[in-house]
Image (cartoon, rainbow, N blue to C red; front, side, top):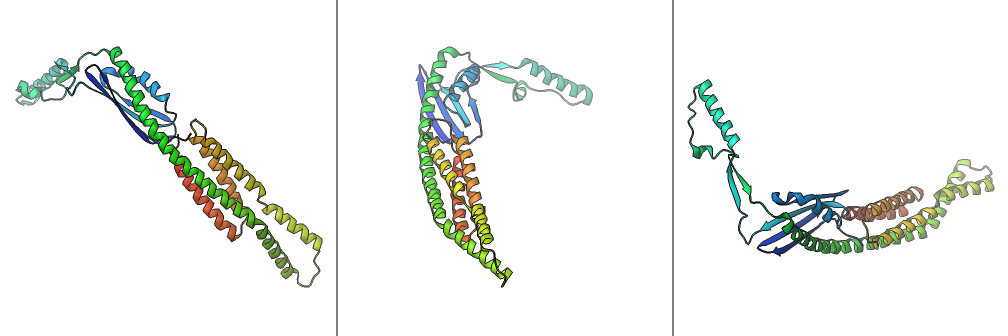
Length: 293
């Protein structure tokens, strides 16, 4: 089953007088990278929650945000005076007065406006009490997120299958044109030799041998067989329930290699134009594979 690496999921979960909110966003990434934002008081749960997320996501950069709302109220906090920092400021003001003669008188109101003079200490929380709620809201958000990934994946899979069909049609067309193209190349070789030797007698056996060598070098049967095999494997992988992106990317490289060989061996213009179209389809698949988990 193809799953997209780009998706969004959201969920809410009520627990006593609190509402837990979870949002998940993901983008393409070569590996799995889980970024979790959680209220500071619940940081001890971060690694366990990341592992929980990683069980459902194999690849992609996943950004998860967990928030707590207490019936619309701001969670209570205790304000504290940062005593050491106040003393440091007062020492600085005294130094300004002693060394530079600057009036260092300062009001408490002005002093409180300085950064970090007053700090908020959030109220202590019962982590174990809220922990099951975090897992539940994450599960709901991941279900929503997976649903979108599967829908996007279905669209990608349909696109892949259609483009593979087009590539196979092109391969069949090349296979049909190849014998005629080979005959034309052999005829050109005969004409070229005839123009070079003039009235001299030509060893027909040797000429036939050279044509046979040319035909062997230009034979594309092996490339067409491998191309079809790679396309079959590609389609088989589309039905597997696993992280497929890297394997599909590898197979696409193999398909592209066979197409390039076709271009070199069957160098006739009518076939080269078909190869160009095949490469265009492969490039479209390559772009889409970057979205596959």
